[in-house]
Image 1 (tube, rainbow, N blue to C red):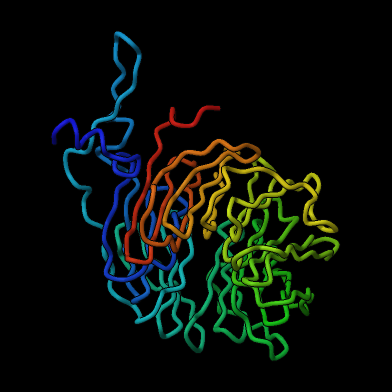
Image 2 (cartoon, helix red, strand yellow):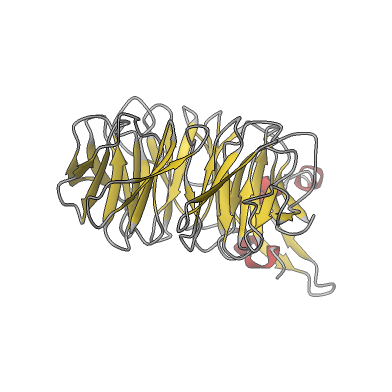
Length: 374
């Protein structure tokens, strides 16, 4: 590689491992052990990438003895190929982080399967009557929640699943609370909220549209639900107070919570939309509004909050990916342009950002410790 081409390398070129899949990457998950990430394709494929990297960025950084200037050399070789598993269905596999290094997926026959970091598949011993459309798991209390699009099923420590039937409204997205004591399910009318310890009637929370996704805050106090063209729904769980934040220029399809900043973050605007929950926007959508990154001409379509810093990763409709500071305009451009991002998630330690795109790119961007100043 000549010096001119080396100078033209981007941060994505230098920090990312990237693979080409045969179908759109629809979902991804890091395992609980922090050793691997799984990419789920639209064609039912599942591929796993170990996080260990023989040419990690920190191993390629050199600091000049004379001037203290840090440089990073390009990779000498492409990353090893992804670990492919058997195709278990012809549609996107519902995917969740399971115990230890395992992932949980659901086959087309409604059977839950463990997939370990090496790609080995084992039955989880849990089965429902038909295809599973949504799935979640909490290792804290060994509970697994799943939906066939109509009913909700709960399994405690791999016990036979218990059916919870809503009132003829169907179930789309589901999410267990961080402590696993509650499960929220999205319906055409909003949310249903159950306790997981006993089969009680659900609490109903009205929203103006079916939630695209459900996101619990880390303390379990709040729920955020992207509602597409209706904006984003915000629910205070204890009081059941709700607010719907409107006036987004494009549909809201992604939201997340920043624990370090105590903030709600959403896509759907021409900059990263953020609010501090010290002054939650329950009565006024302008209450607690925060700056996060820079304003532009292209809308944000995916957001993912850093787990330990007041940072958020965001992708734009142009395919640009940035990491921005919550509460300030500072941002780091990770990728300048590309195919639309379909999945975006940080590892639990905040060192890795996993990315899936519409053209089937699966990538892991690994940030050396010195890249983010405190």
